[in-house]
Image 1 (tube, rainbow, N blue to C red):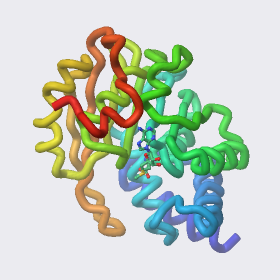
Image 2 (cartoon, rainbow, N blue to C red; image 1 turned 90 degrees about the vertical axis):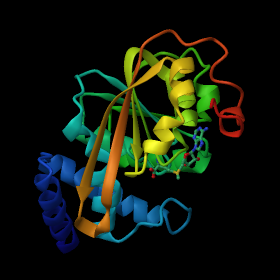
Image 3 (tube, rainbow, N blue to C red; image 1 turned 30 degrees about the vertical axis):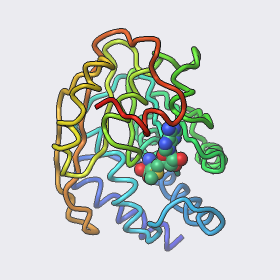
Image 4 (cartoon, protein in one colour; image 1 turned 90 degrees about the horizontal axis):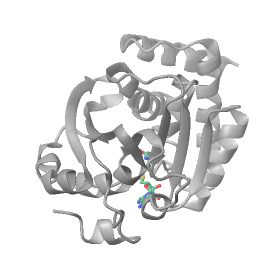
Length: 244
Ligand code: SAM
């Protein structure tokens, strides 16, 4: 219980500095998630970040800070592609209980972990799928079904645009979590933006001094047209031959 007290005080302090409101239910969910992450990480490779304060800042805060800069509506469907151990999808699902989250990853063992997290945290707004973005984006169950798609630490921008556009409804938003040096990637993504009907909108860069997280950026794109049926290309091709 002492550990919970320390965790709660730290998370409240860090989140309140960024004007991110959390109640007791959410804090308990974050704590359970932290315990599961550290426990399962002993048996499978989920994260290199395990110290409590680092997890709060580098995984939890870094994931949810999207909600400080961008607004979501109740009922919005949000897909997190290449979610890994659940970032940013699970922390966002805790913060936005009235949005529906879909978490996908190419590695089955990570999906097994996420299903356990969803059960233990009693998250009723999350579903998962094991699969690559290229295949999920062709499945009518998922194609053009989402108001927003997120990705963190998955691939470079031209590749990410091909992963996310198939999932987005017309007018939907793609959010790419990046470091501060995104300009080069953004400049290289012009052709992919045009080809995939995803137009660059806002870019926010902010600094988080705790735990030396430093400067982080979130880039947003908006889907402005129907996607050509040839996208996404077959598994592996967006990475091997990005649209440049
Ligand atoms: N988003 C998480 C985070 O920020 O901690 C995980 C990042 S991890 C470096 C990249 C993840 O993307 C891995 O779990 C990998 O399996 C997944 N991934 C890479 N390419 C993918 C694809 N084409 N479709 C689905 N998942 C993919």
